[in-house]
Length: 501
Image (cartoon, rainbow, N blue to C red; front, side):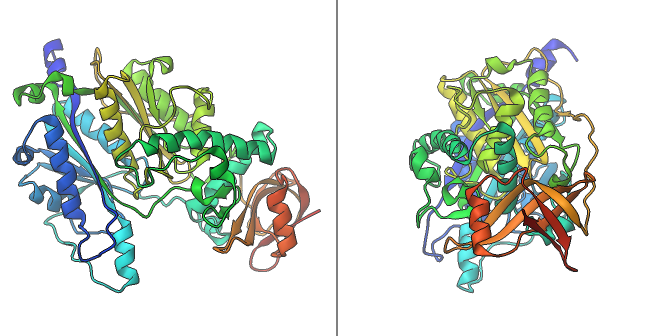
């Protein structure tokens, strides 16, 4: 391929659109088709095209929508735009999938397999859950001809033993990782609370300026970490304001073309934001409880540095970041793995993050990519790095965007971090033991309910366990550092129970 051909096949983001609704009246609430049409129209308008121009799409990619499962959702959405794309793609589950899908589409454009693509994400979990609670039928289409191409792995994120101990959802797993990170850093509980508050309060400032943020409210570090009726403890050390907001109604769309196609359609170059490179990776040990080091993410490092290397961009040359931010530990680990100070003046979000801008199912990174395109178009930044994280710091994707084209663009990388051996899990643990990581789960009234421990026997084997349910013990577990605490674990015939000394 000649240099001129390569230049014409550079993938460029030419249009972005976002949408959200806070409609309480279910009779007036818009469904996924309407939401995507609005986001798609806004993407076309931001490129200077009419909605009818989307009829020429040759690729339509959809990030898996939670709560809406047609036979062929991408096909239904393509019909909405009057398009008959040769390629209809739907991703697997995972918060990295927006970036991964964007990387995949850009790679297809760079290699001449696509000219014009639309990447969309839509999740109306708020409306879906309200309708279910009121036992109302949703008039959302469930058909679509054929089957879409599937992108991504369907391997579950948790093991059966993890789920048996209440470690089957992000709301309990990420606090365990957060406590492991705090202990590794050698911070007291109070010092770590203050650090989390400082970090995430910067996110709220960005959300407050984002017209598409679910909670556009600036909060101080103290507000984020002080326990109150509005900010109850969920799973130690996370108060409600530090948890991702999943139950939203949001949609976003990204219009991506080859430079040649954008030129042909008369889209001015000042609207072009170049896809410079992308990379995908996963942790060398899939299940989080089996990882030797719970405070690290080799997969994140591999994806982020792989994307930067592919783009020919140094970390110091990145002007804007959006790190996946479902919980503070995801951002903190990203900083650690890249050697960034958490007070870096560039900040780590362009949306406000998942707890404040909103974490709509699997589709947050479609929004963060859209916001990054707008940020770069504004001229306040020249190069941006967007990352996504699926499951429990398990799957990763990273995308580099820039106002300047690359010397040469290749397909997205599938990076492979250094291998690591999983720690064996002892299903029926007995004997002297120490705590590696832990959390305390609270009920909705703010009372401690369950203690969960990941520990090691003297033999080095890992185990998962609960603690006794005594309230005074649970309160002590949340009030004092438990990582490294000695005790004894025993199997009671159903599950392990750790009794601290």
